[in-house]
Length: 417
Image (cartoon, rainbow, N blue to C red; front, side, top):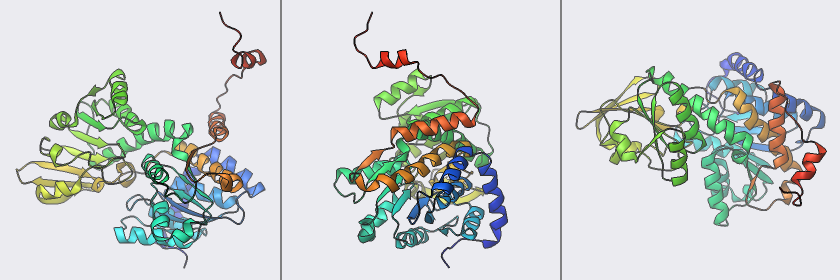
């Protein structure tokens, strides 16, 4: 059996979910039609470590239409939608994923994909790339190239490239304009708020809402929280981003100051130890902590455990910690990415653009991957612009084009005042 999922009886439920996503991802369906005709991925084996959601299933179907054979595992122990995993297994994808995996089970699933000996990897956090380099170097040596879809993963892979350890080229899908300007900002913004509301059911209006990190994900979260009436506070270490947050109308302060007044905290930095015992010691009774970064390292759960005399689950995805001093602090989704662990992740319309990049970049790798240097590359501009144009067309939006005179002017340095 070339798959392992939680419940095979969920196939019909999964097929319905995938159908709903497809109805809102017209770009990917358009690419699928092209792939069905041209088969640009024929005879290629793809190894994917992605969130196993209904939107990911639409990408898997598109890659299969292009002739690829795919093995898939989840990129987070709590993000898999079990009904989708069951449906993909039924459709012939070698899928190894279920919600609630232990750390050992998570890496067992990664090992299964590594054993598939992929020609191309698709990663969400760089765990698959890392495993291939550390445990399966002989497999890594044969990979043509790979893609990476997250900020956290790109950070890891650039560190590998800088250290001269990267064995094959990576194209940073995360750095495409049609990815981070929309997926990171609007997708993370909406889905993070969705996860917090599904978990807590609380009113955001009037609350002090602390966003740690003002990258594109942090921007989106802050924007959506303000839209729901929250008083948004931003914490940052980068002076440029902090200045942007100030100019965008948010209150900016050190995290220790924010810890004293915050009602809800969300980390979105891609770094480790953003909220530790140092901050927790100053938090108000009843403060809520959550994380929107890819890895569960931003809120230091070990510190929270050591400060507590007991804990209990008070709602799905809400753990109440009774601190030794009598205060109660709450942690959402075990400190894992709250938008996928406690909600459904990004809306299909946003993932449509991210996964269009994934599909087209995979085709690009099939054609030119062996010519690329072993480092981290940007998505080719022509792919980025094509995805933007297709998105506009899917919305029925038309734009202007430059005249010949305008094109000539932009290429000339002779004309001035």
